[in-house]
Image 1: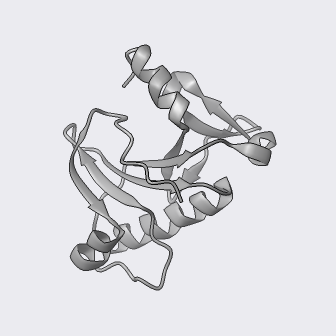
Image 2 (image 1 turned 180 degrees about the vertical axis):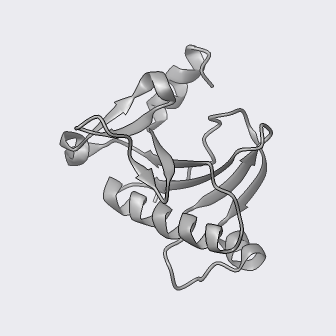
Length: 136
């Protein structure tokens, strides 16, 4: 697993919850998959982030489980983020729309959504590049 803090997609978050916080404060099931972070941006958007060293599909599954649980507990989720070192072999299945905050797309061009929430994909170099372009 990567130890990556929440991606500042809409500025720095003002509330940040890790896995243990989500279990303790929101009652998420520790026996289910839980993403690494749940956080709130100052523009009133809530996001879930999973940092993965392995496969994107595993990160998406983790986001799906977490978002479903959070919504069942009455929590809002507006954005989903997967952070990885690199995309690897799964690159043949996905595209990244860099003009739309690194929105994850299927090769068909359809946006990847988890429980109705759009997924954004980042690697470390993306953060540096987006900051340089004034996008973060």
